[in-house]
Length: 167
Image 1 (cartoon, rainbow, N blue to C red):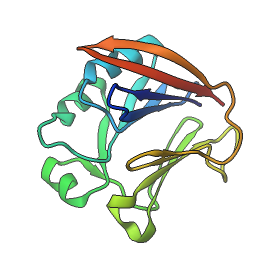
Image 2: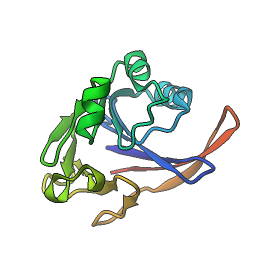
Image 3: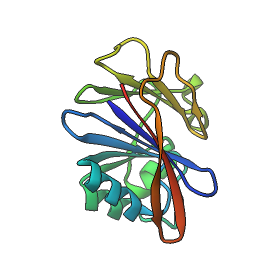
Image 4: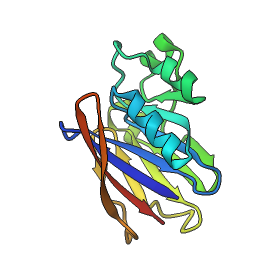
């Protein structure tokens, strides 16, 4: 598994979690600059199949972006899922691709407190390597191997930093 954390100038992180074998990837909390993610996916040989949008902005065309990259949009809010015909994820839902498992977890199935537990199945199928919260990333239990920070470049006036790790 390879994971990337991108932060723009406002400090709002987005995440790409990828299976190294298949190149399939999940994009979590995308910012408005979709061209940036398309460029990164092309450079890294990734296929953005799962797009998790924790806070839907009605001004943003997530559906067109998903069609462009061949992915599907997943949201945590039932009203948003119905309004925009997105895929609703609830506590207990699991998505697996290659050696990556994403498990949705929430106390009392409240969308406002949703987290994604990220498992590298080559490491453990019982202990997540990362926990991504709806608003922020929480440090996962265990050792983080190979963490590096690089300048991911800029696009449309935004500068992005990238942390990535292989496990």
